[in-house]
View 1 (cartoon, protein in one colour):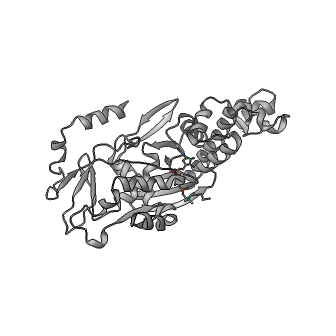
View 2: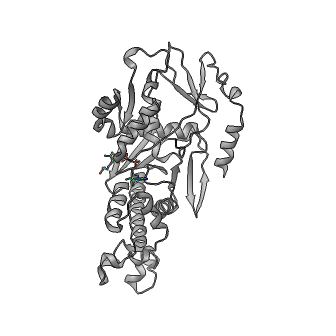
Length: 361
Ligand SMILES: Nc1ncnc2c1ncn2[C@@H]1O[C@H](COP(=O)(O)OP(=O)(O)O)[C@@H](O)[C@H]1O
Ligand SMILES: CC(C)(COP(=O)(O)O)[C@@H](O)C(=O)NCCC(=O)O
């Protein structure tokens, strides 16, 4: 893929060449080389996360910048509900204070950063094919950012730090995982997602054809194979939960939730006259059926006027936004554009070569 080609290009460069000087004229600043790594832990495994930070001494890195004063030490930027919920735990176990950064601020900062500095980042998913989108920096805003985590936030983004959370829905990733776990007895999210790949939603979903006796319904623009009612077949059959295959249940559930999110996203895009919708959040997991369902929903309801795009670093928007909020510690640049300048201290520029969402230690 073009993604791999670009990464190969990056890696192929000599790192010494990569790090000297800044083409935009700010070469007074020292340039440090580095690479951002992302590691993720389920909330229930927070102790593994603490253990990981401790074993790699990551919490000691807060004072790596030579300008930081002693009271800056052992402060880590953190965002999301966990920044509140686990503040005491971090203090107790690691002696670290969490500096809370607003979740929506971070989502938007992370998304803007990725869209402006990382290529390829955003892609469309049409007919089973990912196609990377060239982002025009002068024509990025406004757009709708839809973050599908446990719940779903929909944010109208008008610029750097200029945004409004215009909507949301509680039917999100937590719903798929929670309901799916109850209905299929799956032990992990990955297992549930994998099951969906082998399922057939028509076993459980009521189609237009089931209602109309096998024919299309052209007057209301619906084909016989369109879903009339998600899970609707289950009411008309004398079947118990055990009579359905977990594969089919998982597929119907994934379809229901993805379709619903696509539709609500479209409605919000319509409310504000937006035609670009970027989707992020860990629910997506680069999963073909999820992205296809969301794309088809947006395309269908907007009659092709709005475009659904997905972010390669889907689940790391907030974390990246929190990281970039270390404003006088670090400026990040990618391919020649330096962001953030906080005089009078010289700014070490952390230049990463690629952001690798799948890297694990
Ligand atoms: N390995 C996984 N374990 C648990 N949930 C996962 C996993 N991979 C993806 N998910 C999905 O990601 C959702 C959480 O998304 P995330 O972006 O991390 O949001 P939050 O901020 O709510 O934690 C879960 O509800 C689930 O649908
Ligand atoms: C409360 C939240 C912002 C928390 O973010 P999350 O951890 O789900 O990523 C999110 O779950 C959400 O937007 N829920 C939907 C609430 C609503 O608008 O109905």
